[in-house]
Image 1 (tube, helix red, strand yellow):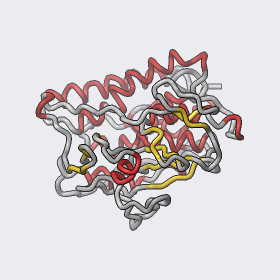
Image 2 (tube, one colour):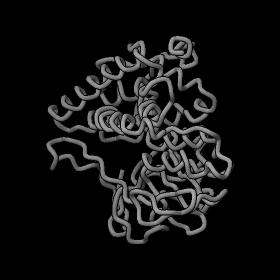
Image 3 (cartoon, rainbow, N blue to C red):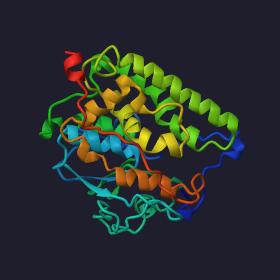
Image 4 (cartoon, rainbow, N blue to C red):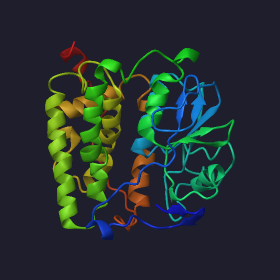
Length: 328
């Protein structure tokens, strides 16, 4: 997991020595917005107008952050509007690559780049920072609109509504305060919490992180015992943001990131919630466990130097969940 420094690639792992063994995630650098009319969004100076077949999404099927964007693309029926390239799940000294030899990896279908960092340099030849997915790309201006998944899913939620996107609001005005509050502590303790546990290089940092993970999972278990989704009986972005971590939890995070106090299958409501969303139309098509498990176990040599992939859990996400009948 390297980075670019003034346009030059450096193969460097995360620096945890200066943070007491704690993993600190860097802030996304490209923060412009795609909007219905091209008006600038809340966190970027530039605005990009919604148009059919103007935008392209670069993703990893392994990455929970990129997974959010694929789910919103599916829920909103944006496949005809936004094309996709899928990187190879194996990430070594050159970061994400466009090697299409792994099943479901597509290569760079726009520019035939070999590495993702070359796409970043295409947008900014002097870029400094991490090279991450997802990347929302403007094919007209040949530049990055955004590499912040939390904002891309909000763009997808509304930007194409006037052009024929499927109906559905996953960030409705009346629930925004509740969604924002949920997103805050779920991101810190669960979405990013598993990484803070897995990438910790001190016992104290690990203990703090894993405690945050499981305290929050217990809290979520209680919430999901009261209604079908996090804010009630309506699916929102808060559910999607949580779900992409939950679907990776038992296959990867329990073993690879040492988040092994309990599995998701051990929680009645969380496991039902996991199956409920997995069985919604189009969602299972966004999940690729081969990409997920190969990426984590084989790419993170710092924490799994042998690259051995664990045997994996026994779980059937197509098993009936009953939550639609329980919460009517």
